[in-house]
Length: 377
Image 1 (spheres, rainbow, N blue to C red):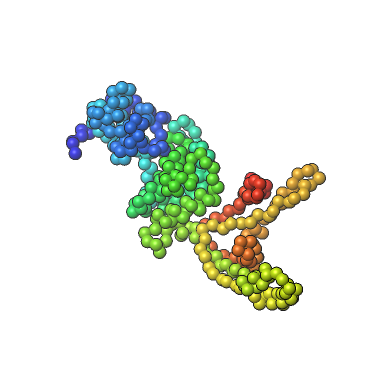
Image 2 (tube, rainbow, N blue to C red):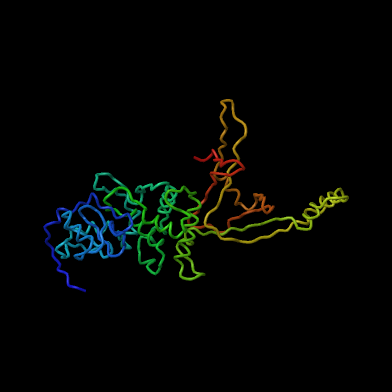
């Protein structure tokens, strides 16, 4: 490694423009599209590769007269084309925005501090409640992220990168970076762009979830939680912060009719009348019951069917049902009937998680179109 001169005084520090700096996007050179050895110009905000005499950053410094650059990986600041390193404390705020960091003491004090922060444009924002940019129909990702940011143990885990430094998954590290940016109190802007996280989602899901295509939030949340758990655990039997926060246990009682009875019922011919009498007498004795326990990360609630008839104002009467009534599905007594395979199910929650996720299906498909349930906005 060649020796690099380190200086505290630089005549170009006043050209640094914090208003144009945005470190939320993927770190690729704007000329070569390479992600190796990328620097950000602190004057115009663009990304360039290298700082040698034939590099794109060096050329940009001569062509545009922009002289101050920061290495996006090492966070060191250099003056080009002179090539010396700048060691000035006034640039620390840029380093904190590039890579937000929290100590364990700061993490413990997060919920006690309700102080608002001010961005460079004068707008106020509350750390942890910042807006997320909607990048072409990615609102289903944004609502999922905003929901997970309210889970204190999950947030505290991802605010400290040492907790998951053993993990090789880009999705885990991008989720951690996004968590730190959302909770950072010294951002230059009042909103955060989840662009890098979305790129990791597209790659990990093999484009099942991608920019520009609308998806269901519950499907994305289910995939995200299961993928993060699989990437974080160190062995197949070990747990993770995901299961510690969200995993509960459900007891399922499944009642199905024995195959012999079903086959005799389906069979036609002379003995149909006799079969009906016999079935009626012995049906209760020919029901097979199976009881088992299964883990869950979220519970699905069934909404009441919308009414067919309209009121006097020619509007559908939207039924209002308390949440407790819908949750009776999991009291161990309410019967839920399934069509395929035909069975009667009873569910009982035997162990509640720290944080319970419930979801309701907004859309149902019939033979003609997708129908939205009017009881949900």
